[in-house]
Image (tube, rainbow, N blue to C red; front, side):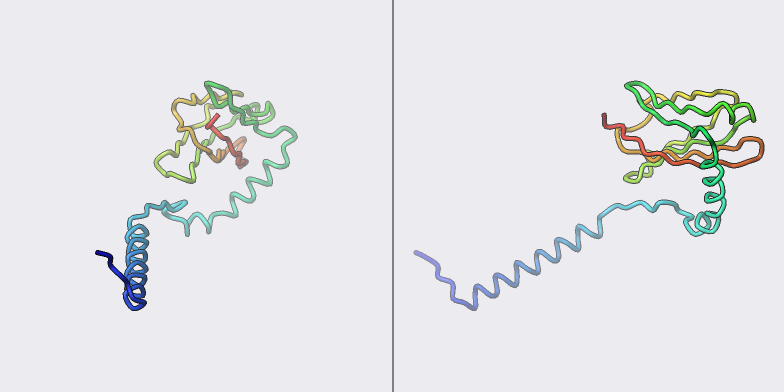
Length: 149
């Protein structure tokens, strides 16, 4: 026994398939998880002029802050000119794909080389955001690092 579909039945099946597809997409979009860059993004945007000024200060340095990776560590090297002036601040490892993987490290005063163990970070791409204060002058630098390798 064979079942024959006339053109009306084919249109109904096509329409039902389309409705099922749309309902599936709606279900998937409702359950999609997404992170905002910052929960207080409005306040951060208003204060962004400080970041612009700090970035200009950083660009005026003759030797920039160097971020490098090896098999065990992320190495952050500060220029001697900043070390002599006494540095402080924070280093923020920002992961755009997952807010839970972000990490913040305080800069140790007087050290020209900071080592952050790679096993404390996830294997992903990070934006390293450094806020450095030396002799009451602010510096800001961003670097991308890829820890997949």
